[in-house]
Amino acid sequence: MNISDKIKGGIIGVAVGDALGVPFEFLTKEQMQDNPATNMVGYGSHHQPLGTWSDDSSLTFCLMEGLLEGYNTKTIANKFIDWCDHNYWTPHGDVFDIGVTTRQAIFYMKQGHTPEICGGMDEYSNGNGSLMRILPIVFYLQNENDIQKRFQITKDISSLTHAHIRAVLACFIYVEYCLELLKKTDKIKAYKAMQLTVNEFLETSDINTKEINFYYSILQEDIYKTDKERISGSGYVVNSLKASLWCFINTTTYKEAVLTAINLGQDTDTTAAITGGLAGLYYGNHKIPKKWKHQLVNYEKIEDLIARFTKIIQS
Image 1 (spheres, rainbow, N blue to C red):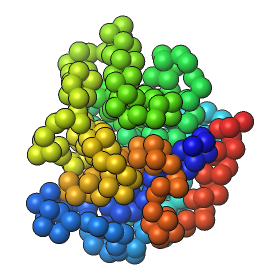
Image 2 (image 1 turned 120 degrees about the vertical axis):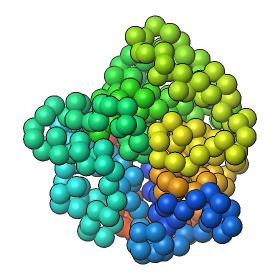
Image 3 (image 1 turned 90 degrees about the vertical axis):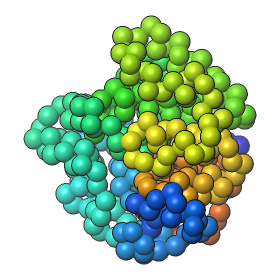
């Protein structure tokens, strides 16, 4: 599988997972178990037409467009502002879902603050709003051998909206795992390689051990062996990362991975978007159900962005 199929698979994987999950957001795990998601449907929680993606995909697309012009956090921040204020990269011309922390960060961006310090820095700003959009950075960093530089760039991109180290660490672990998935065909071997790389880096860092320990079950244990009852679909970034890794590793297809994520309930669109990024990158675009892809609102526009992004990445 070539890199362009992995890039397209990852990005389309985010958007399809997102759109699948939108109608079910806020439903409990018990409600999902009683009436599980099996296909792309419309309306539901946000009363949006079938194939509608949310802020997860919008901000992923904004990040990609920002990177087309070279790495500049100010450019990316301006794309986020355009989305929030002018409905840029929205499926139907309006923003119907935006996190509190992201909204606050964009307010600071508009005041002219340095983008990397606009994100929420307190312990209560640890939603999954930066993890849900981080995937494009994986492709940008695929040939970067300096892990310190990979960490710094991931940190800066997370910090546009979520600057607390806990949210940054979730993004870093996810990015490093995706980088291993680009190199390895076995998802468990990639997971073990990620653990080794991340743990070695963290041992020499000055990051608070208490914060690192929030990821103990991912970095020191095998998260995919955790009992399903302990996996949560909440919007807390630690839970989101655990859930996405668990759903991806314990399933064998893109379709199964994202539906498993949605059926955890709660923050269904984002859990499925994060999981969908992993599964799409790993299985490739050709393994995402064609019907779901073509049901995405503005699918041709998304394809065009991916083609432009891939061209820049490959050059």
